[in-house]
Image (cartoon, rainbow over all chains, first blue to last red; front, top):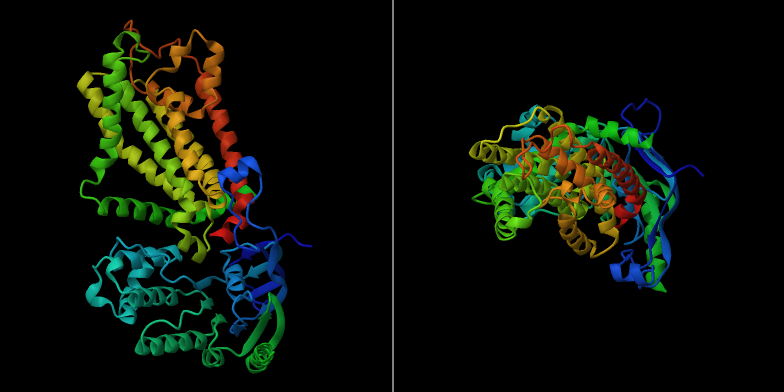
Length: 262
Length: 275
């Protein structure tokens, strides 16, 4: 078996898939408590919580080519978000590998980079900078970001005084102005008021229209069908169906109907 | 080789590292009215307390160099960087967990930014030392030209190594932070801050054990920058001062760095699952 690895390389040669996932597996502790207290470490050397692990993802393989819109479908806890994080490189696999050949704009934890004590203006520069934009690039896009998030009149307000909806709006605006050709979305479209949601949809469609590659996690049938042409259905960490979005979604619906019918 | 790859990646992202350091300092200084004064006030008060206790009350048995208050200020400010750096790096990953989980940067960056932010604070506190030197008419020594950069480099490497290990371990082991706090307090007295390492000249074996503590040599290097005197009035660092102590420190520092960074790499997958 190959060494587990997550690599992101910039030199994407045309033809090669943008995202290449091979035999990917990741193992979690059953109770999600891996931490030891010092007392446990000293006296027993073991965690006091019951042992046991499970594979959140097992032997997952697929390729995504440039410009594809791929939806990840499945019940809660089936490994969708974990898979997204592995592709984003913010988690490391226990087995297999993820290769991403282009830059990634992760719409995961959108407000993670923002600091409550700084103003929105400072926060925009910081977060965009963390995602790799230079100061000049941010200046160029600053107005676009501010207009999209509709926060112009509160630019110098400390970020913690923003409502949670406004915080997410700003996060979405910053991350979607990145030029990265691969976009990862983890159910962030469900936030914001109606008008803003519609704006987000438009922005997403525009990005897809530009030929970006999309990996999309959602429970909403409507959203999935709107943005994705292909669907990957995960059940308990394994790929059950990988095909057209319609077929994959039907497979999921059939499964969950069967489960609730029992 | 893996380590070199990481280092290269970090060098490529140095602009992001700078951004994070500036952000840290900005937050720190925008959220308190006195800002800079706090960074200086705390160590200065401590130096005064030690001066009162050891320089005044225990006057006859003092084991430091003259002027004692300058000797203390150099030691305490140096310790402040180490202490603050280590305390903050234990929380490095948890504090920024949202960012760690949403941006694919080399994870070492979260530790490094703390080391550098604290380093900048140390640099900003150097004028205080200069003021004390002027007040007591103590000139710098020529050694400052290499001893100061060497000391700062060693200290950066040391805090980074210790910080990498602690940042990762703290995510996996709860109450590590409390352990670290206690150990740091002990380490303060085991490190020659309120006394000189030469106070142990009658016990050479013990002196070399003390030298295994890398901060011993680092503090010694800082003090070589200033023309401190022994109680008899002789210049403390001319000719007689050996190089063993800083040399041992350097070796231990590098070893801790290698250990810390490989531990960080090894624990990284587990840490990311836990955050």
